[in-house]
Length: 455
Image (tube, rainbow, N blue to C red; front, side, top):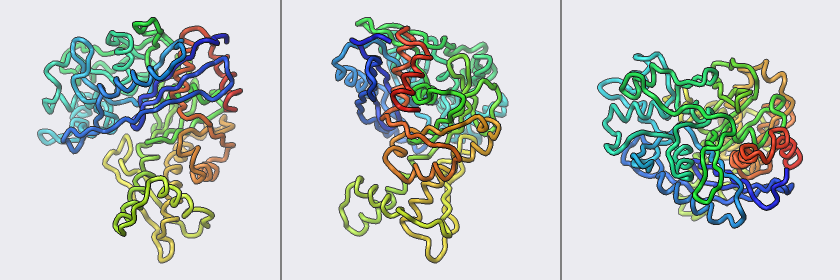
């Protein structure tokens, strides 16, 4: 593990922030991170949740400029499912339609693209998945005339770094487009033909684990991009099969690592570097649900003509829920944006009594609802959880808010470890670069993670 002069870089293109993580594996210290905001753009479409890929590309360049040390490798990770269109030169000619985009649910000629695709192919693609988004755009006539193809933001940024559009990608990103079989390593051809509107349609093919995609103009190796779930697990977990990873960001995920090719129907089977699979239970509104409650409380202050900053409101929320007794609690369903299978489902607040409808109870019960969604996946996979000795939790909500830590302890009967690193996916991406460039073995990265983070 000798690479004292250079750092390995992970770039995490998140929904909220774009972050660069620089890891010097010769030092036993938490890696340095720098972030810039990622913003939603207005496409004038009520069903849209879009971002600007050209802006994202520019922010990545700015973050790389801020790294003054020599770079040994670059690996891109971040948000998945969404797509953008590119021209013949590989440059974006559309917004990034993110994983939160709802166009697949819009009725066209009396039927949504999601339902029509299921009727014609038998495949149910969740709202926001890339193949469904393209299918909807084709039906709506919204594919840009200059587009020669589409890809995810991770493939796009990686291609721009090496100066050539990708023809392959890591299976961890391919699975997020929809209708990808992680066991066979292929897309459902019937779905591809229907989505693309042609027979024998082709799309990105799988790369090998830890494969280098190309090099920057200055000769820096860039690996094929890796999904944020897989990168986060790789960077946070040193003992794969005896630990469960809980990630709480905009959305939430519970991930179990196994060699089993079968996962519960409520969870997704995702490829993990050629030897294992992740069984993943994903929610759509974890930290976002807490932010919605924050906005509601802020609106109360605004209605009272009280000017108060966001940080103070978050402090008030935590303090209001301190030391509350679990007597007749509110029940908050935090599925504000539905689920992947039922996107039209909405949240609710029940068990409201004469004395429990308070800010403190709202806050505590919202946190319990967020963790409860993740805990339900544990109930769906009892056999897998028999091997689990500890829970590793990551995300700013868990690190900064004791309410989430307490809720985790109440819901999961396991030791809980909070991963004290600002960006687990970005850190994992940086470590993937060390393996791709043969600076480390997988076993060495596991020891490094255990020594550095205790996870």
